[in-house]
Image (cartoon, rainbow, N blue to C red):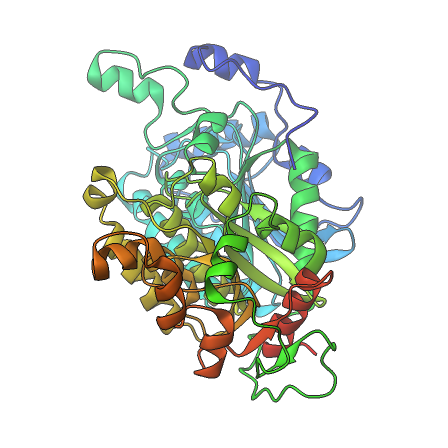
Length: 500
């Protein structure tokens, strides 16, 4: 999905120009009108308690008159394409959308009510952060809101965030950055420290364009930059995928039988032709071999892609998606072999993205499907400095402690630790020509005999092919390389997850 329909601001524009350019952006009520089904919004808000300070009380009255709201957030429930959701929406015209104790009361009450009703929660902040009139007590409300969100997410319910212009300070550093999926408004100013404060404290302007939504997308901090209608579309797609699953899928005791397609050899490799391990290695390296994206098209239903780690790291080597598999929600974490062969190294950032996907599956209580197809992790000075080995270990450890079911689809190349990082799942299904090895056969030959000539022999003796792995019980299903390879790989994965 893209942000068609909204102009992207020039990243060279000054902060003042950015603010002026987005001054037409809608307030809280307009956001609710654009996000929710017509007439579906029902407020959960109660009138806030009065404050004792006369000057502050007068400021609140002026803010209410100017904004048309009684606080800096509006909360309640409504529908998106008929699916019920809870909402927390900031009103920037009310004291800059700042968060005081009464504001936090309202946010926390909405989060808790969403949890009680088991409703997905959508937050649309636009805030300068802490309410300065209340000082440190207001500052500490960010901790309180975060704790409420942690409890909410522990219920396995989805939390989607739409960052509006501007979102800065404690709001961005708490409930604005905790979404399972995070989208930003085109041209929005989003950052930790507001540029006005930075310039006042540092005596120089903040570098231009750094705190723009588009810049954050390019650095893996937000998943997409979309106008409100685009965000509604994405939210609807996410809710449609997640709708069938209200709780974690129990780990099934799977016994594959006669229901399997004829071209799938469940639990065995006996009926799958053996192409020879070295022939398989060569076949999986062919440029036209189908990869992750073809598998998604032919084997899965709807998908919504995530971008980056959500923490300022981005790599094209790994993709993370919410997806439908046999009509059930899953998280897919896959190697993008095509991107890797075109120069996008499987780096520490890519493995951090993979861990985001693993955490997402655990948080939402839905199964994880990994797709293993890589020539191997990055080998470079940068990789060592970014602790690539530790990143691999972290992935394997995360997979080991998952409480949700997990299955790996061994699609093609499976080289070294980069493959192991996604292969350490509960089950593994494999294409007949797929393979998994500690090094590419040429690398193993260099170690064993000092040259690459022994690669074909070592591919056999090391038992790297799918049939050999199945014979040892390391691969659970082997799928022949016929015209329905991709569909049957997805079928076999779904069967292992108990979907068939």
